[in-house]
Amino acid sequence: MYLDKKFSDGARSQEAIRDVAKTLKELPEEDRIVYDFFQKEKTFSDLPTPIARSKSKPSLSDACQALIGVLLDLDSTALTLRDRRILDRTDAVLHQVVGVRA
Image (cartoon, rainbow, N blue to C red; front, top):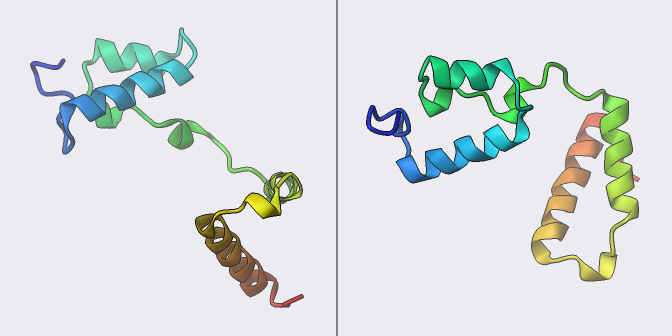
């Protein structure tokens, strides 16, 4: 597959091979996707990422509960400037969607 340039579909082969290895580690051993990837000698970009394989999005409730859990576990004294910017952007989006600022 390497010699047939299956790993150079717009990326460096070395990076593509690492991405494939990471994806393969996350898949079940007997997954049909893995079999098809090697049997049909697909390019690395044909191998779906774990996110692309998920069939359903988490519910709004689940996403909010996960966010609340992360926020409650934060040590606000250890936040970096980048962390604070991310939280500010998240705050702005939430208030834009909900329409009310606290």
